[in-house]
Image 1 (cartoon, rainbow, N blue to C red):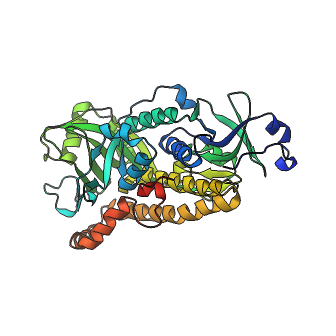
Image 2: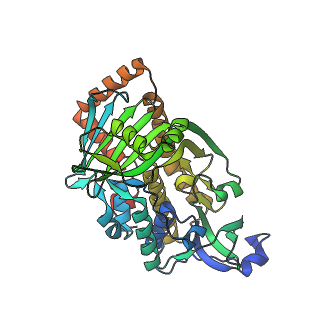
Image 3: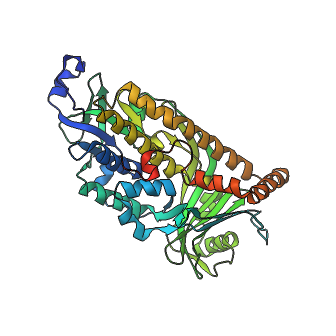
Length: 425
């Protein structure tokens, strides 16, 4: 693979600092699910001799299980399998075998089913699995350590890019010189801000209340999404008689609900949850998170790439946020690997522009779709309700169209990166 030569005169104004710096091939800022997955994907693509450094101050702390879980689509599961992490994750994963969508008001006695999906994208392969975020995070950390990724519990304070590379200053003391810097540091990315990359963003005035619920009868891998006027109420299966609840409300109402006595909150939950699974009770502390949309004006900079929430943030109505980030991971790792194997500078504008072209349109299309779905369903209009229910009913009667939607939700349509097809780099 290509190696960094930071001693060339064209290295720019930072020549003196660069000459005294540590060396790495890639530096990743952000030790969340996208950052750790990218480190492992690059380890596979660039080989065991590549120096990959990951910075995140949170690595010094024990990961707090906040009760949240993520839907891992089939394409993302293939990626996690190929980079060696799924074996650790699978014991905590629950396949989604079917999905039911209803459209009603909160106090409606009956909730007619308008759309159903079978859960297999291929025979024997569920289109998605539900996995607690804590299990995902720990499995990726353990796999990264085993793969020799340099995990540093420190923040990147500043960086300077030039023709030869990027020089980073961090709390570890000695600067680091790298060919490529990748920002995986979330929706409020400091790296994106320091690079001067703008961000288009707005809030929805909604918050997602998330927690784990226990119930009497088994869910049999069934996910349900009830579209209510304030926003969707989803129950997503977890191992055992448990599910992850994602309950969308207007922000003021979400705050009011969280302030209720537990007995009253339980009553509100039962009203929305229904009685399909017998009794239900709250098993973890409910928490609310504001919902919004954001898109970076560029996914790349000078020797810089944005991945995951640092590049885009979408409404969780379709459960695609993490999966979009992992698709970024697969695309960037493939672009970098392809360039390195033919001896090219894998952080050149040509290589990074390939990554941006690959991901930007797909991300924008998903963002527009989820924004439109939220506006279509999260309202009190009887006219819109009638129109969308007719639309859902028509889709339910067209097996080929349903099959296309399943494959799209599984991340298996369009220009699918190798890792998401289950192919090694």
